[in-house]
Length: 333
Image (cartoon, rainbow, N blue to C red; front, side, top):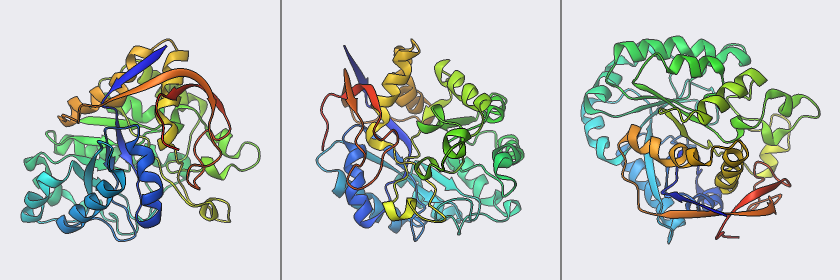
C-alpha cells in the first residue's frame, strides 16, 4: 500500500545556519515541497537584506530538490515603508515574547507598543505568526497568552493570526472563537505528554518549548487534527541542536523531527482510521489559509516497517530507535 501526498508543507520549521543548516536542510527538502522558515537566528532575520540572504543560503543547501523556503521576518517595530518592501519576500512576520525560547532575546517585551506595526500588517495582508507564551508558570504560559491573542483578534479582524505549535485544550477551544485565527500543531505534541519528558528519567531530546502538557491536552490536539479542522495545519517546529547542547546541564529546547515527520504522521492517521485527512493536514489547509500555490511535487510513502535511526547527520531525531510502519519511498541517507 502507498500513500501519495501532493506538495506537503511544513508550516513551522527551524533550519538554523552555517554547518547545522548544511546538515539538516536537505532532510526537509527531501520530503517537503516547502516550509515556513523561522527567523530566530543568532542575528535575527529582520531586514529585507537578511531575508534575501537567508533564503539564498537555504536554497543552496536544498538544491536540487524542489523546495520553497517561505521566509518570515523577526517581529520588531517596522515602518510602513519597511513592511511594504518586505511584503513580497515573506509569508509573514514571526512574533516572539522576549527571551521565551531559543534566540528570542530581541523579541517583544512591551505588547502595548506593537499595534502600529500590526495595523500596517493588517492593511498589507501580512500574516502574524506568534509564539504564544507568557513568562508565567510554565504549565500556564499558553493559557495566559490567550488574552493577548484575543485582543489582537478583536482589534485586527482582517489580520491572519497563526497560533504556532499549540499544545493545550484551551488553545483549541479559543481558536474556534475567531475566524481570523489559525494554528499549527507539531508532530511531537500529537504523541507525548509531560510525563514522557520528566515522568521517569529526564529525556532531554523531548524537551521543547512550549513544553508538552497533560493527557487531556494531548487528546484535544489529536481530536482537532483527526476532525480535519479547517484551520489546523501541520508545522513540525523541527528544531535541531548538536548533541553537546542536548546532553548537558541546562539543555537546549527543541525536538528534531524533519526526516521522520511524514512517515510518523502517516502511521498516526492510518492507525486511527483517517488516512484521507493526511493530505489536508500537511498541505491543503495551509494552502487555503495562506493562499499558497506550492510547487507541484508528489511525495510517496510506502507501507514498510523500519527502525528510525539514532542519528541523522549527527542530530538525534524524534522517535529514534522506534519501529514504525510507513517510510518515504525514496530517502536520502
